[in-house]
Structure formats: structure tokens, C-alpha cells
Length: 424
Ligand code: IMP
Image (cartoon, rainbow, N blue to C red; front, side, top):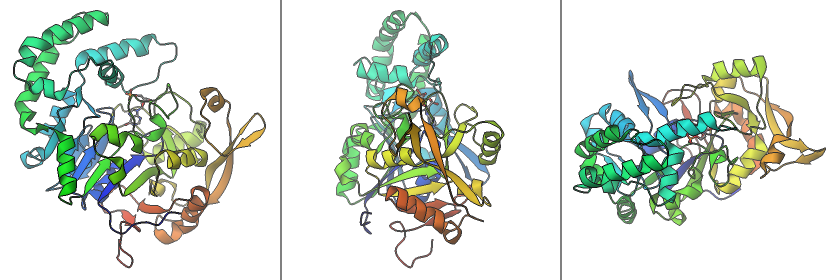
């Protein structure tokens, strides 16, 4: 185990599984100590639901920090932003919160034709990915094809009137959907410019300045590292780098400056969409776990596939994210279970594997090896200690945050986020 520093300036929170680990709640807990919360990849495929008092807020682009007074909410250059959704989120916030949003002029825009072409592809694919249909993949394709439209373009005088229509005509023609969504795109880009122009800036420079001023930055990864375009279960992945490794290109901020990486995992696993999921369970057992955990997508409402905590997958995520500690969420869903099934290895062609395989073919043939770990009567530090110790033995990584329920205040915080002797 690594020595944990007490003095931390910058922290990154990432999802360790296939998304929906409850990162929003963990970011919310840590945000009270931050000066800015920064998203660095993905877009409206992500979703958090948070309650402030009785008001329900659904955030797709904006990091949780936007709900904390005095904190900057930064949308980094690695994101792809869907104007209509972003404006919807902005309109649900008080003006004071909107004034704290900063948007990278290098972030790309997702326009209606992106979603339209994605829908056609998913419908006609032999093996659909089960995407969120928000146009994320096609928007990143345009970015890496050096053909994208950036926030800075939209804010440039004359771009929407003089350049955008031609670009969209040519683009939709090439995609085989001529004219699709052009009027809608122009209208929404105009609204975006009107409402958020003063928020669009060079966020790379901003983050660098904040660092030099000694301000604390909290980076919020969306999705989970098993959906990483390079290291996830390709091709059943998203089109960005949700792991810690995506932070550098997604912000222009050096990952060497990050003091602590917290990885969020539930006490069990879920996945939405298609693709390998070695610890998946089915039938009544799965149904009961899905209901108990409320495992239905925030963005699409789809029922999530469910399975047991997967140690080989976690070991892979620990390495990939250079992880310092775990935040364990949704343990309350398993309250009162005498033992907790955990996948500790896989069997492949009669051989036991402790590592998550790289190849999709191997992943499909895996048989999970399940151990029963000690359960807990209620979620607290004492009842959960045997389980937490076992997790640390299996991965070498301590638990720094334990979420004990849905509410903001239902949380136990350990070192290094709590000084020794201080109560959570
Ligand atoms: P896309 O990101 O919409 O292209 O979808 C690609 C895959 O990532 C699909 O399996 C989606 O279900 C999954 N995915 C994308 N965003 C999230 C998320 O925020 N939580 C969970 N799964 C996600």
C-alpha cells in the first residue's frame, strides 16, 4: 500500500467499472473542499440525479460542483457538448450558479445529425453497441477526423450565419442524411451563443492559473474505465477515455500534478448496453438486486445489467488509473446479507486467471470463480471492516470513502480525506 499524503491540492475521481458507480455523490462530498470541479471527457451520455432540498437536479454535462456555492464548474476540452441538453441544465440552475460555469473553447459540439446517424448505425449493425444514442461516437469521429465544430467556432462572429450551414450541408450529404437537422442545429447554436458566450474561455489556461494560485481542483471522470476507448471492452465502449489517463488530453492540465486518484465502485457491479460482463447474474437473483439498487439508467431509463463485484476487473482498473484509494458506494443495497458473493478469479479452458483478459474472445469464454466474503448488518465502518479489509488484501488499495445511503450526509470519510482523529 502506498503512503497517503495529508496535504492534497488536486484530486481525480474516476469510475472503476462500466459507469453508474455513484461518482456524483463522491464528487459532491469532495467538492466542499475544492475551488473548481472539472469534467474532462464524454458529454450528455453521462447523468447524475441530485436532490438539493426537495428540488431534483439532473446533470448530464455539468460537474456536481456547480451545486456548491463559490466553486467553478469547468467543462474541459475533451468533452463533446450537446447544446440543447446543456441549455436545459443551465436553465434549471439559479443565475449565480450559471455565472460559475466555464466552458472550453476547444470542446466539440454534438449536433442533431450526430444522433441521427448514430441511430441509423445502431439499427443496422449486426452487433449494436447499445449506446445512449446521444451522438457521442459520431461527434468524436468528427473531432478525430479533424472535421469537428468547436465551442470557439460557434462564438466566432459570423460563423453560425456564414460557415455552419455550408459545413452541415456537406457533412449530412456525406453521411447519407442530406439536410438532416440543419435548421435545428443553427437555431440551437444561436441560443447557445446568446446564453453562454461569456462562459466560453481557454480552460487550459484557467486551470493552470488556478493551480499557480494554490487553488484546489477536483476532476470528475464520467462513465467508467471499463468503457475506455483504448482499454475497455472494445468495441463495446464509449468513444472517450474515462480513465484517469484521459485527464491530460481532456484538460491540458498535467496529470503529474494530481495528488490523489479515487476510484469509485459499487459493492456489486452493473453495466448498461451490450458487451462482456464476466460477473453478470441473471434471473430472479438479478431482478431482486436490480430492484433493490434502483438500477435503471439516469440518461436512458434502461434497466441495468447486474453482477457481483469483480476483483480481476478491479485489479485492472487499479493499474490503469494508478489508483490511490477506493470510494465504495451502494453497500446499503446489500445490508443484512450474511455473506457477499465476490468474483475473485476466472476460469478459462480449465486454467485459473487472476487478471482481466485483453481479448474479447477470451472475455466471452470466462467462467467466474465466486467466493463468499463477510457481509454486514448495516453500513458503517465497524460492520463493514471485515469486507473492507478483504478488499484491501485482494487489491492492495484502501477504502477512503464509504457511501452509506442516498443522501449527501450519508457518508463515512477516512484518511486521507479526514485528518486523523477528526469525525466524518
Ligand atoms: P455512448 O457513450 O453513448 O457511445 O455508449 C457506449 C456505451 O457506453 C454503451 O454501452 C452505453 O450504455 C455506455 N455508457 C455511456 N455513458 C454511460 C454512463 O454514463 N453510464 C453507464 N454507461 C454508459
